[in-house]
Image 1 (cartoon, helix red, strand yellow):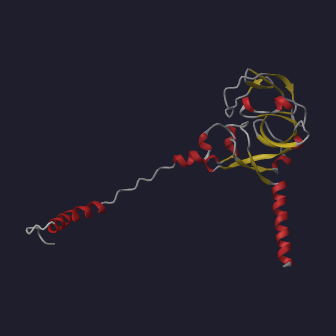
Image 2: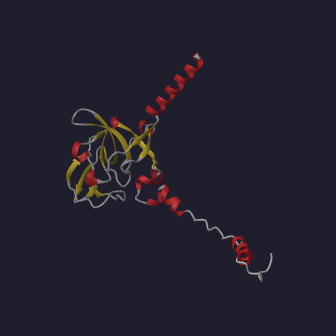
Image 3: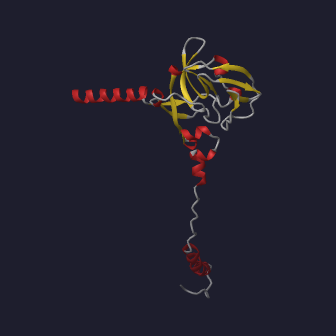
Length: 222
């Protein structure tokens, strides 16, 4: 019993360590990242790589954000600018260091504007892909690099929206599992010939049986 209890405790400790330090699952409660993440999506969060490689422009990250109440909230957004960048928005067009950005994953239309801001070092400027319905760096400022939890590794639920992280950089629906399933060739099963042949043989026999039951003396026997 003691050995079993120690083994169970060790398993729990390993599971807790993996969840806290390496891999976790997260739930998406809002529409701020549509169409990349829809409300109700679950994704795997990888927490290891951010320790040696800081997030880059265009990457999706998960981080802790401080609410006005002082509480910490876990959020998922896209990095659009890193430390030292100048970022601004002009009539819905994102410009980083004066260069317009190509963002195929952004839900259109977007008609917002924002004055130029310089991102402090070791900070990130993040936006939601659904810019009209996202509460992000435009409202509460930049995210400190130390608050980044990790990068989404892939969507795992619901099954039809399952995909790897590469799908987050595009609006190409073909990278989702649903498109792959729908694109599979549908099997065409040949219709067997035996039911029709059997019915053709049985029809005259049934006609003879009906005639005999009706009392027809001329009806042939089997």
